[in-house]
Amino acid sequence: MRWIFLGLGWTNVALGVIGAFLPVMPTTIFMLMAMGCFARSSPRLERWLLDHPRFGPSIRDWRNDRSMSLKHKVIAVGSMLVSGGIMMGFLGKVPVWIIAIGLVVIAVGVGFVLTRKTRVERPQS
Image (cartoon, rainbow, N blue to C red):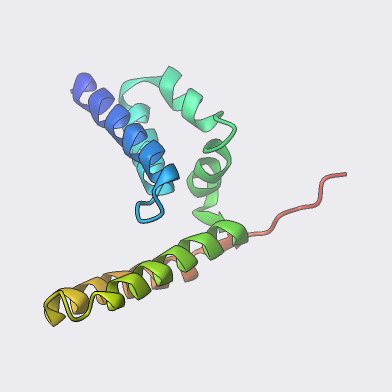
C-alpha cells in the first residue's frame, strides 16, 4: 500500500507542477493531495513538501486550520471566472448542457473558496 500512495503522491506533484504553468489547471489541490499521499507513505517527502518554499505555506495553512490567504482566494476565484468566460465564448460550438455543467462546477468551486477562512497576512518587522 505504501508504494501506491508514493506513486499517487508523485503523480499529484507532477500534476501540480504542470498546473503552475497552465492557467486552466489548479496547483494547490494537487499538492494537498500529494501531501496526503506522502503522509501515508514517506515522512521525508511529506516534510519536503511542507517545507517547500513555493507550495509549503499554502499547504501548512490548509493543514493547520483549513484557511487560505486572500491572495490565493483572489487568484482561485479569478481563474475560475476567466475559465467560465472562456467556456462561454465557445457557447455556439459546445452543447448547452456541457456549458451548464461547467458553470455549475465553477459556481461550486467559487462557493467553496469563498466560504473558507481567510488567513490574514501579517506584516514582517
